Length: 151
Ligand code: MN
Image 1 (cartoon, rainbow, N blue to C red):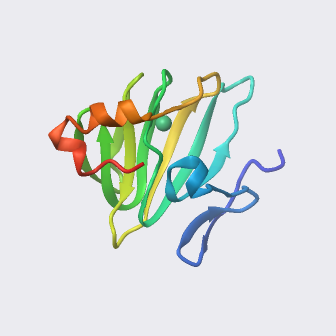
Image 2: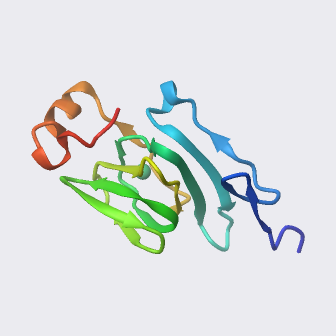
Image 3: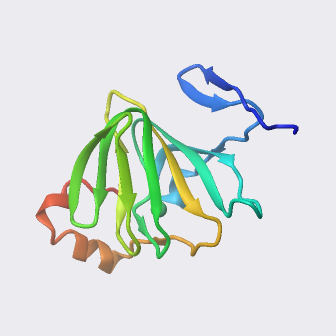
C-alpha cells in the first residue's frame, strides 16, 4: 500500500511528516497565532475519524472555539497550557486532554516552547463556533480564564 508509512522529519524547528501537506492559518481569519495543521490520517470508510497534528510556535495559540464534536488530544512536544470550560491547566509532552462537547477551549504554547499535539476527531462533525463579543464578555466573568483567553 502506497503511503502506508510516512516518515517523520524535523524541518528546522518544526515537526513534519513526509508527504503530508502543512496548513498554516491566517491569524486574522482564524483567531489563532503561529499554528499549523497536518492531517496524518484522513478518514476512510474503515476508520471514520481523522488524526491531525497541530503545532504552535512559541507564544502561539489555537483559536478560542467550541463545537458539539469532541477532541481526544495527546501532547507530543513541548509545554503550554489549555483553557477548557472554566479553567486553565498546564500541559506538556505526553499529557492527554479530552475536550467534551460544547466546551470552550484554547491551547497555548509557552513563550519559550513549541506545543505540538495530536488531535483525534470524528470525520462527521460540526464546524467550530468562534467566540462572539457577548461570549467573550461572559468568559471574562470567569476569573480563572479572564487573563488567559486570546481572541
Ligand atoms: Mn476544537
